[in-house]
Length: 156
Length: 147
Image (cartoon, rainbow over all chains, first blue to last red; front, side, top):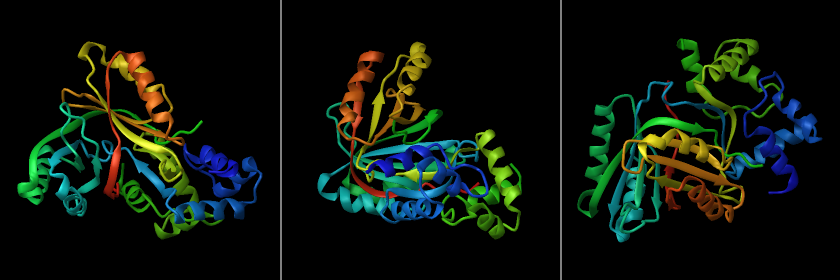
């Protein structure tokens, strides 16, 4: 990240100015033109440094109160294929492979499921279990009970 | 939250335009005025229905790193320890979960080397061992919820 990109991240990581011309408002602080701010954001969106631009909801406020992190211990030789299959399920919002920490933490596959009720979420977790089939060794489900912080990336 | 708020949240979880008058352009798609959209967004942020409105950066693609960390925090000391963890700007999210490992936070930095440093600082400050679970592969991420 060059100095200009860093300055842009710092200026926007907390949100865009809610004014009719937000990119113009940012350009003044950054010493750029409005067109330069727009093209830099376009470039960062294009190469994935920005995932998306828009509203970041608090999922509890939208009624999603049954939010589970489902964790699975899946055979190493099968985890990539199964991870892609689980990630393709329509209700899975994030799906990752992570390092195990034995003996305390045997799980290598993580799939987040957000639902409006425990019964919906539990039913979806059963569908994940069905996808994993005989490659599954053990599993756990951790429901979130409270958001303690949700700011996203903050660089200094 | 009324029907229009829901439409705004559903329409604008991504794809905010990069043009001179992006609110005007989005408002037109929603058949409302630019001023109404801006004031609705202000209210949704104020009510904490939205935590943010703007670009969502990927720390890893910016040259930094993410890691998911878990701790087992004593019940009667939970609030104090949550505050000690949350004070670090590198803590991007933190959730309480119903489990023996009851505090789960994501570290996001623009410099991957900082992750182990912050983990050991949090361990020292809280007295709780941190289980650091770096991501090895991403199969899917698309956090869009219907309001």
